[in-house]
Image (cartoon, rainbow, N blue to C red):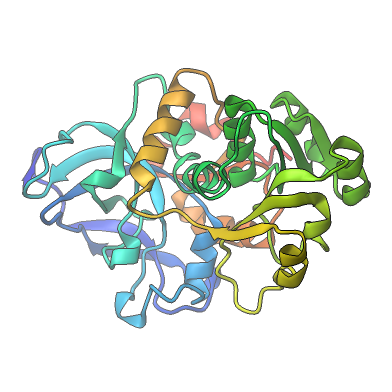
Length: 349
């Protein structure tokens, strides 16, 4: 292992001893992980709170067995490289990065002072992108880009409906579609209609007070080319009715047991190709690098974010589980919780 000055042997982390939900999260002293071949050790600055985190804590993710306990949640984050494992040459100690953690590989997540990642899963951050802003990108941005461009094969000029447009994944999806030159409809609650308009959504839909099917039919009489569902759980009663014959339906994988799924026969009758999308380690680095570059260059904007201390991890996870979070909740380690980030510690909704 190569690295900077000697690192502490222990760290503070938010961890859990069993898959019983957010209430099991508590502060613990754990050993600082040591990077192995091909890995990097990151000093955490900020991490995203994602739906996958509460699902992990609830035991819904089969790739997280009991042997991983005590479990430090957290699938993504930003921070500074402090040590490198054997064979890593693409990163340097002291470099600022955004990354996906190695939690699914049994190496722990990002809700601690330090985290391990595969070096290939880390993308350097330009100086004009803050840790908190960059922490809004990895899991939701990668998922959105994979769903739209790879699984959904969205093309310039096509019409896409983003269900769940004010959440982290939906907001990145809107901007990815906009940059591609697609025509965009998106659903959100009444408090977020202004947010959709600010991002250039052509057909914003207030799903609480408007008939979604009627609004889509007015905008796209033959149906949309692609429906991206970031919510799932039966939030759209009849998605096939909104999609043109031969169109596509892509749903972000929720991993929820007993989830109500769309009617496969309805899709087949209209020739609609249906896919469930999730990011992979193979495709993630290219997606993340593209999104970091677009954001640093001002072509895309980080979604509204709320920063909380990492000690508030359990409460943050519970809020994400309840849904209706505008933009993204970010956990910031205490030494990075400066006056600048503290100014955002309020509910923007």
